[in-house]
Image (tube, rainbow, N blue to C red; front, top):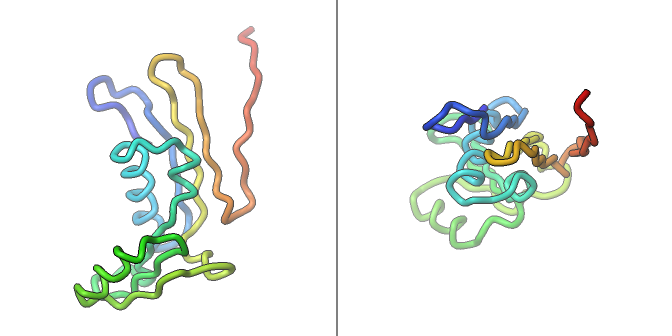
Length: 128
């Protein structure tokens, strides 16, 4: 859950399942939403990275679509990199879901991971 610093109001609820990927995925989603201004679906769809064993010297898996400049920069710094992970190998990146709440209107905006079987659906709800 992410809240607005000034009021504590809900900004977003998010999750990225998948073992060691959970904290890495949560941070990636947070940075894409707040730091890069992506909408929920863009944040979920963007290429991910995962240090599979969660250790400082673990192999860095990079999803297809990661910029080659980033791949080469990691290699120059001595990281073991497995780049352009595709197909079933993408399971290592987990499954993400995001819901962002518009501060002004209260409208909810969702993103669901195409790497898995979820979906984001709207609900037309009339207050009683």
